[in-house]
Amino acid sequence: MKKIAIIVAGGTGTRMNGKTPKQFIEINGKPVIIYSFEAFFYYDNSIRFILALHSGYFSMWEKIVKKYPIFSGLTVVSGGETRFHSVFNALKMIDEESLVAIHDAVRPLVNQETISQCFKTAETNGCAIPCLEISESVREVTSIGTRPVDRDKLRTIQTPQVFRSDILKKAYQQKYSMNFTDDATVVENAGYKITLVEGNRENIKITTKEDLILIKTLLGKKPK
Image 1 (cartoon, helix red, strand yellow):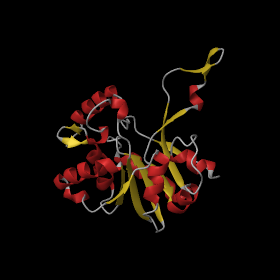
Image 2: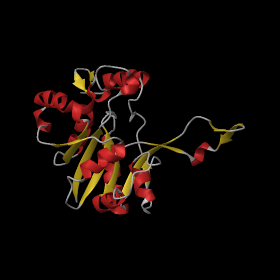
Image 3: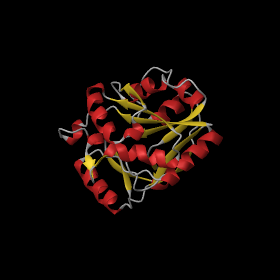
Image 4: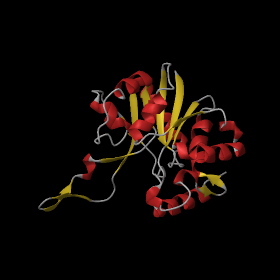
């Protein structure tokens, strides 16, 4: 089945308080977003890319892609008000039966094993969501205090989240809800069962300056 990767970069990086959006910050001379594209390209160089990008950054992307012409032919759509709307806009560009991966542009260290496992599982089960077990103790904050939670019953969720295109497009016909924290919650709310697979520890999402420092360290150790 044909494979498609939607790279979501619709945010403006306001939490980083920097002039450069976090997806365009350079690490070792290469923008973060390019690392994310390369992860999928090296997994399967026939994969089709769709980039959901804030419209204010189209010109910035055009400058970057001149240095990386291998990605110059991909489809670019305007990012929406939320992640849901960005993915919704990208899905309009898909009219063929396929497996669709949705990945955060600011997760540059997703590895080949995670990508491969997600696509293989989604082809069989309809979807695949990478996750990690929690190693630290967890407590729930309530109105009267806190209480311990069994961490063995909890998982942290990553991307790429991969789905059959028919499932994904039907799920995104729903009206937006603030409860849609990721694509899995959208699909699950449409009545589909979610399948979890093991992710990779290094697949960190850059949200804070501390995340960026860690990513720089890990990428510095990664073989070229």
